[in-house]
Image 1 (cartoon, rainbow, N blue to C red):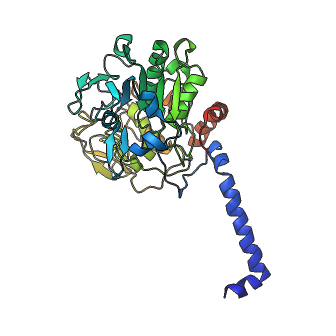
Image 2 (spheres, one colour):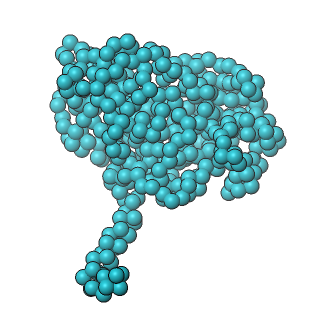
Image 3 (spheres, rainbow, N blue to C red):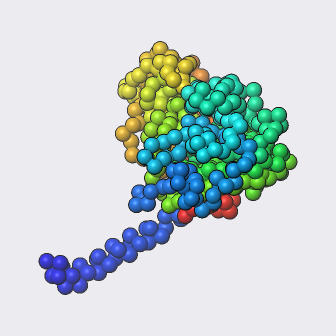
Length: 420
């Protein structure tokens, strides 16, 4: 049967043409990313994190960072995502793994949500002690967001190992900035354990304006920047974004078999209100609701997969739910009130920021209700987005105003990429 099909010249050339189209599509994947039309592709290769197994740490790592730690006083910046896959395919914490390997861990610094990742978004986290190891835990989301000289005294090397999700207002990259700055000023080398970015397949959103710099955004990057945390650390250094232009002595532990189109499902929640892959994919879009009176699913187990408010019309917004106090959301918006909104859990994976939900919610908010709140500009990184929505610009018109800044960022980004 095959013989007769290929004997026919017409069928032969159709198949050749199809193969050529597939080949061209593969070669254009990086171009698609830079044109803001990238769609995540499945990979046959497993993404391997450098500290994925104890064997990798000791032997298989191209850069043997265990050797850099031996005989040194070490501090770790980490949280519940700082995990290592062991030989039994189970996960253990990096702190526990290094202690088992006789590394002298002196203290742990924890970011927003705390060392075990249970605190609310924005909640101040106090210093404490790890009950399992007895190590002191210094909060970088309490009185201090930057390690002090006193806290760094005696430390000879620092490790930063936190899972990022590639969104500017996700504050772990702000913590990275302050840790790098403190280490640079104290002359402490920093090891950054790179991890996959689950939102790395596209670049989108307004670029932050410097006058709106805050802990929700410290650098002139788009809302979605398509870089791993290791690449981002290199960019902070290279662009001299640290105070007084100081640069940190960093060593990046790169990923194996990783590309920006590699699907990667996080093995644990990066924070309490990002429970699954769908929430992480929708977070760049629904995260903008954090600066409005709309509830984005906090107080449910559908965080960043639904949105709603009591005042939205239930005919247009047919999905209903009632926010309740939950782990990571003790005081959610509209707690105890029936909210009407949309359920987005079955939607296809996004490859750009969706502004339609935000604009429609604004247009359907009664005039006696305040929609935009004080933190909206900090989340957006610009005053323009709020103004554009209020004046009735379309999604296309708004997106066109981002184009020039996005192209300029892509030129900067190219200098710090580690992967294909």
